[in-house]
Length: 307
Length: 263
Image (cartoon, rainbow over all chains, first blue to last red; front, side, top):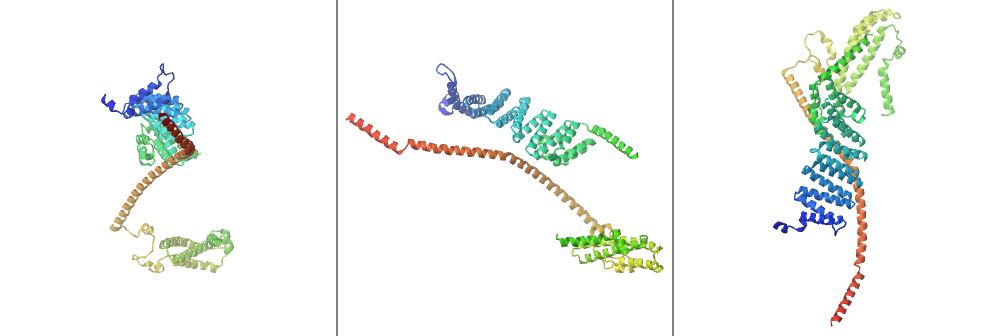
């Protein structure tokens, strides 16, 4: 009790909370909640709780502050508080609450007419949820990316794409990861960010190869070679070399191509990890099937020559 | 390139390739198409003249590397011409229709003269003229040639001594080391290139953001200045000198009344 007396009244977060509650709780004497006066108390309380590391109470304080700001018709500040609450909930490990808070924050931002922070809030929410609820995190990333694309702000989306891809790879959903990379490439194309585009395209091919889906990889490479910017890049050459090595069914060649190319070192590190583990599985059967096909074609030519 | 230069060059090129123009040959020299000897003879003569011209150019050339290459070419042409001589001799013995018997007898002599002319073409060696005389002597001749480096390697005149082998090895070793270092440099350069590309993309991203920020800040500054001015106005109105005097006078009046009441 002694130290509470010594403590400055202004620095007592519990006191702040109480004052705020007093102003907002409805009773006989009070018919409407006075949010205008209560909100600053809640905000102060939240800051003080955070400094005191009382996460649970800080989270609550932020929630109340957000509610207050909302009632005061400033959704922007409300959104900020919601985000802080979400971050604190993550520390507490309350994953559902985290998801809720960040979603609410993003809605508030959209209300305030700022879609970009909304998408960023969703992206941050996704990052917070990666450990706890990965599926939910993935959903949030996809929503964020959708908003960015709608608002033509693809450049801000690059970080989100990256996080989403790395999450997919962690969850071993390789086709989804490759799709995300291609979507990233498309955004990069719109912003004329050719270097990023080429890197993501090569990344997609590598992911397909890692997932042992050679046909997809080939198809992907064919589609991508239609793009001028990619076609002229060294990443394209590298992808061609890699696919040729695969067609020959020669794992040594594949490893050699990966090691000797300078292109690999500049890609995202998770993709580098995947590339270093290529070739995955037995690729000799590819050589047989393509070799047999090749021989038949060669024989066909010879027959033509004889006639 | 001026027009004069172009004309001179075109003339030189035409002259050079005139010998390949069959219509020109027929026109100029009135050669019987069946007379193969004369055809070959005239072609060889033209080649000899071209080679002599080249030899003269080589004599005047200052750049030693160019001199060496020219001489090498001259030697090659000479060798080719020498190979044609036996063919010419055979053709010389054949009978041709519209030719007088004296001309026919003269032809082998022409062939010999042509062979001598070929040998006379200077190829950058001082010993070229004496070579024919010394050809029956059996000892190995030391020729002081300004030969090009790879020609010397190609010809089997030189054998590897221990020194030259070691030299070549060291040359290879140093070359390999240079290649390795160049590889390292190229890796570093590609890293720099990537970093530069990333920086450029970031800047492209941030450019519109900075523009927006500038706009908003300008607007905010304008609002602030406006509000400051208004505030100043309001404050000065409240605290104007006149109001202050009125306050003082009223205060005195109140004090006076109080003093009167208490007196």
